[in-house]
Image 1 (spheres, helix red, strand yellow):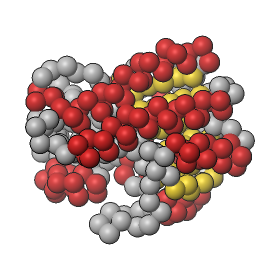
Image 2 (image 1 turned 90 degrees about the horizontal axis):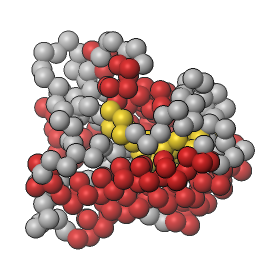
Image 3 (image 1 turned 90 degrees about the vertical axis):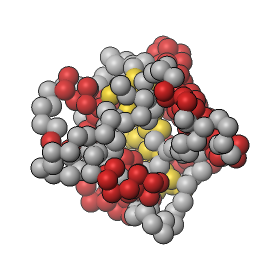
Length: 276
């Protein structure tokens, strides 16, 4: 196990929620963080920008680079990798956290929305990983983490929102693919997914509502799990579809009440999609 001091980690979709929480967790260990997101402007209903998170990263003890990028734009993705390496001297990790969601069935999902989900959820994982590869190969502690679920083929995960499922499973299959292909370069590739719903402003905004938030956990649990992955020596852990709670229990965490969104609550937690 090693710490992240002076390690350089790019996090997509990092202006709020899980991405922001990971940025602050890694920064507290002295990491260099690239806060990447599509918009540099504040969302009218959601808190945070790449610049506000960059300030928080610096305050937490890390170094920050705010970079506006649409992960569908290969040229901009390549520019981000070069800017990162020029600024910090290399790249040690990529967290493919940016995502798009529409829980609609095959009969009703707008094709434009499917294209968006595919481009951000699946294609961008390949684009970002490929663009960073030459620098990851030079790192002695290289990691790629995709925020994608275990491959659960129960039809219940396909019947109501199969198009979304396909794009998230595409990420998970790329984890298997890249882990095997990049092993020779000592680059670890894993997926990370929450056991329960993660209570973020985006979940509430996208229709979950307050009742869903109250049945979830704070994004700190995902940040802690990602930290454990990144702190593991390269390729000692690779090609796995990791559940946050399972990994943290294996690493000795016993207090999971600390992660509850609604403290001292007797409400049952809501298990996340794709988790039995």
